[in-house]
Length: 217
Ligand code: PRP
Image (tube, rainbow, N blue to C red; front, side, top):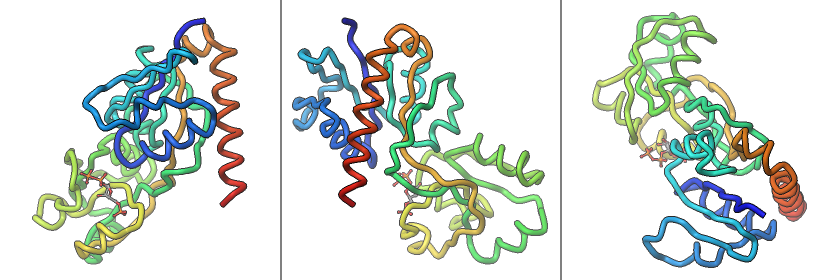
């Protein structure tokens, strides 16, 4: 039996993902320890797990360094890697939005040439160019995107909104919704052919754990 390697996303999704995998019968005790170690092994189940930054998860999966990845659909859309998306995990729910000061609403509606700051330039481009047919200037940022309109870098932002508290705290609001988002499972295309039974079983176990989880809430 070959090893199966799973790439998990650091940060907001990590705890829920690990809890879900444990419920599905794939636990890795070592991972819970507070250490600088990057890769964890469950020798008995022949599974490896590692945590990486979200945008890197589809990269590891496309190249086969991980057979399976768990990552937000925002990142899957932005990275546009050749992977199979096999399961919506239903947690990590949030929205991709155009946000800004209320005053930007009119400029947005009148299709004026505006500046858009985003950690997601591909999603922003696709939304404005292909959905809205509006020409905009897109500026890539790497975090704290809400600063864009506050310091005059951009008119609006395209970013994820979960509770809305970051927007509220900075006097910004949702102006348009681009799409709903949640955590997804992705699979390497070759692994899917070579390890079909194991991967199918893994998906099934995770799906069952999700159903049991949902039944309780
Ligand atoms: C994300 C996002 C928003 C915030 C939204 O940032 O970019 O800033 O969370 O969440 P809320 O609606 O619950 O306030 P993250 O915390 O991942 O950090 P970053 O800004 O450095 O990217």
